[in-house]
Image (cartoon, rainbow, N blue to C red):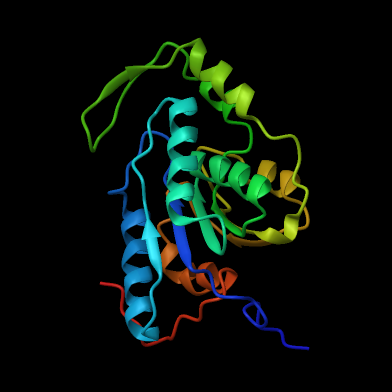
Length: 215
């Protein structure tokens, strides 16, 4: 039996990347994944669509945007990739539609997280938009909260062992049975993602040659 996690895996037809809370499609991780998809498509000579929607800071709107983006790509053979809050949304989509997902430092119970920011005003560095965290954020995230992971084999977790924002042990418990790669000393930004792109794309059935450039 092959030890290659890609062996026997049908290549994903498209990739949907969901960024984290108060981030954007211009984030370094999002743009890296986009460049990687484009490079893989050129190398393989076949299409590999990559969609990175800008998600609202309001949870219910972000969820609607994520659903609409998946609808645009189609439910079949789309690989989900989500970072932080995007990982939370990607989990809902994966569970509902039976899709594979790669989660980068995912938020497991984001309602608990935003409770610590209640009343604070935040600014999106990319758009300049200012907003204040109120009870509606907590209520919306509570309504969206999934109960448990039914098919852990669908997931690949990429976790920073020194995440200063989210405790990686929460993800280890919630996604027990999922393939998990922990980067010792890795922080919440997970700026070591370039090193994990082969694993990320292998989860979607794509092989990343060592010679491939993503710049």
